Length: 209
Ligand code: B16
Ligand code: MG
Image (tube, rainbow, N blue to C red):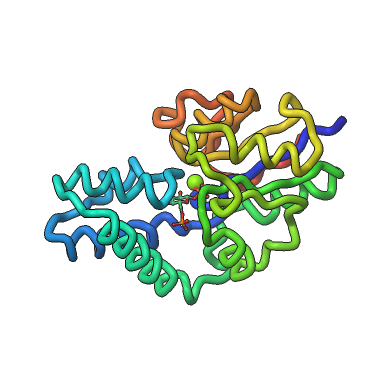
C-alpha cells in the first residue's frame, strides 16, 4: 500500500498562527495582563480550551466556569474577525504544490488539525477539495499530544498507521504523531522539533521523491 500523508493545518498549510496570537493577546489584555509572541509558541497545536488554561496560568488569573466559556467565545469571535479576509495568498510556501504532487502520485491525503475552524479556513484558501478525509477539533475529544486526531485520520483513510506520514509544525503535534506510531516530518526549526524523524523549514521545492 502507498503511504498516506496527514497534514496539520495551522503553521503547516496556512499561516494562521499570527491571527490566533492577536486574538489571544487581545483576550489577555482585556483580562489585565500581557501575552507575548514568545508565550504564544507554547500554544501552537494546542486546543482552544487547553490554550486558555495555559494563558490564565501565565497571567496568574482564575475564571469561573461561565467566565471561562465566555472568554473562549470572545477569543474565537476575534479570531474569526481576523481570518475573515484570508485567501490562497496565506498558504505557506510550497504547501499547495506539494499537496497536489502527493495526490498526483495516488497517495491519500488527510487533515489532522486541532482547529474547530479548519473547514472554514480550507474553504477560504480553496484547498478543501484536496483532502480525502478531514479530522479536526470538532471530531476529537483529546488534544495533541494525544494521538487521537491522527489515529482517526488513518482510520478514515483506511490506511494502516505504519503507512502514515504526518507533517507538523508544533511540538505537541510531533509528539501526537509519534504517539500514534507514525513517521513525522517537522515543518519549522530542527532545534524546536527535535523529536521529528525529519525536519524541513517549509515545503518549498519539495517533491514526493
Ligand atoms: P481553534 P493545528 C491548532 O491548529 C492551532 O495550532 C492552535 O493554535 C489552536 O489553538 C488550535 O488549532 C485550536 O484552534 O480555536 O480554531 O479551534 O495547528 O492543529 O492545525
Ligand atoms: Mg499547527
